[in-house]
Length: 569
Image 1 (spheres, rainbow, N blue to C red):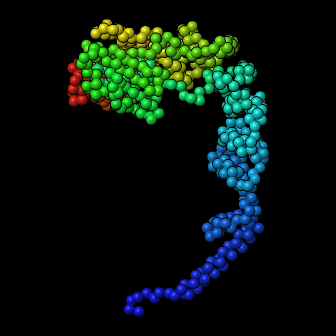
Image 2 (cartoon, rainbow, N blue to C red):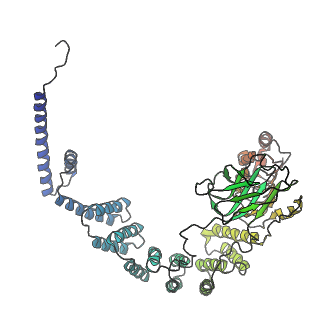
Image 3 (tube, rainbow, N blue to C red):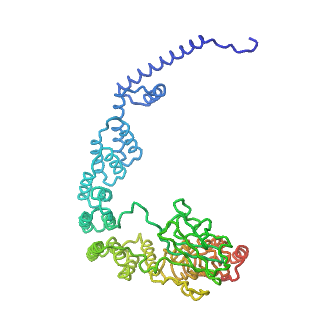
């Protein structure tokens, strides 16, 4: 009364709940009865599923243990039927794994046999191979037994790439090398080489055996403890206030794994390391920007700059003279052996035998790309100097012939890589003389790369170069030039370059010759805006000449320091 709601008594509430439970119980019993009727009549329709869902929501614990086993077995049977329809169904295989891992007392041996049957239907079904590894682990099946299975498949079909790959995973487990030099015991490796040679000679054009062959000839397994990073070169620029380190392998100096220290006159200098490319977090070349007053000379005539940390030993740059703006130091005598792999006498003998076999196969099958390519790799590993000319000749033959037209660019890039390595290892290190004038070394800092390059490799070893001539090649990109932090003059005329990406990282760049390339719009020139010292730019015979007025306006607005700009009107 008076607008107030009547509050129910406790007795009334209990009675209401009792009636509600009784009502739900009637519905629940009816659903249970209906479920058993449909199960007995084998009516597994949408209504049965809907009722089952409602029962489980009302009582998730309704299923008995017997029902669980029955349910799991039906799920296994159901997924097997699904896999016969689509043997590469991700969902069916994953669900099957879940069922086996969840059900009590699964029959792993039966599942192992099922894997055999599915691999008989499709020996390269990677879903089934993954499932087999899952079953083998759960069933505690020995690697020795699986190794026998792999050779059974290989003997049945040499082209079974999956079986070869599976074998490469099992051999180190069954026959590990106790000396930790190789993946597997040497005697076993020799036996495997005989096996794979038989496969290669049986079907030379099949790639499966060749990939396994390359794995067998691979180097030692990675060390458990990572080797120290080797510092190759240390460079300092007093005028521009920065320091550069070049390492043998790419690292991330921003990672907490590394602790690099720079000292000037025994005083630690703090700063942030940055990669030479803003797009790369892992690099061989890193820059440290120094405060302007750090390299200021007062009483002493030289400054000691040392870098230590994760390297093999502390490396020190000890010569920065009063009248000089640059100085550098190397940690290696030269690059003559830099790209070689150190082989033992036994390894050399083994590889030479393999090379002889490949040469024999080439004579029988002159158009076989795998024999040609493996011959090249073996020559490169055994003695790159001895076979230098032959390697490049064979790569050029692969490129120009019709043996493998789909991989012409791959062979061209490989040719570029090997050619660049040959050039670098033949270059003397730029000397660092003990005098106030280092201008006499300028001739050693000018490099001309021969024609036919399609890609840029290993330019981290050219960080001291000030003039680079890449004219008359087939380069499409300049993005890999970012390590060349000392570069002032770049000649890339007569290439296939369509934009200047990569040059924005070269802060000292003063002159660029881009004649006879594919520069079309001012957007292609945008990276040059970061080159504040650029005074010369040549764009003769580029498509951008068709819009020279727009280009001229853009140049004046965005490259204010440019004093010479060449193009045809």
